[in-house]
Amino acid sequence: MTPVADASDAPETPHARRPSATHVLVLVLVAACAVVLVRALLVQSFVVPTASMEPTVAAGDRVIVSRLVRWFGEVHRGDVVVFDGAGIFGPPTPEPRNGLAALGRGLASAVGVPVGRQDYVKRVIGLPGDRVACCDDRGAVTVNGVALSEPYLAVGSAPSEASFDVQVPAGKLWMMGDNRGDSADSRAHLGDHGGGMVPVDRVVGTVVAVWWPLDRAARVDSAVLDDRVGVRGGGAS
Image (cartoon, rainbow, N blue to C red):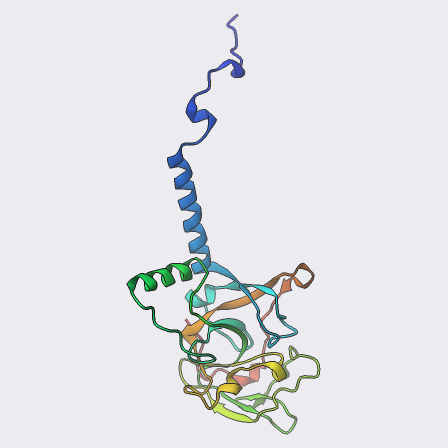
């Protein structure tokens, strides 16, 4: 009978005890590239700093944002989105002082830590070509003459305490917070350059869920605004 060797009796080689430094480095680089690709192309997490979108999302909530809309989809009325508001809702982002600073900013943005960008979360109310106004005889916001029911508004929040009547230009969006009495949105920037309109290409992605704190964890659905509004312009591609 041929004896069977016990595996424990086999001499250990250095490679069997631990992976080589090169192997570890390759794994780290692969993991880092995967993180960069996921954050750049698929999803990203943001912290909501204010109460302007309550009750949908509250100050301090951590939200998951799908970036797929930026690459493959369209922005729709009723979507809750994160966008870069630098120079629109806030001061312009200073230009990098040199090439090294520009490279650092690009790398930080790639891994999901954007430097110098001012991110805001609001709801899309008007698409390119839409006429958005407030308020009608019932106090509602209208889009292309159709009153919106807006069930997502904060309790006791009027659709708008400020009157406005705007035509959304091509390539732009009209944004409003769900907590209308505490939201410095497109209405607050009507007198600024650009009239508070947000370029479609500034949209970072669509908010799909609150993941923290756990007692508020929930999916965030886009509101289906009245189909009678119609489509006057189109979304982002």
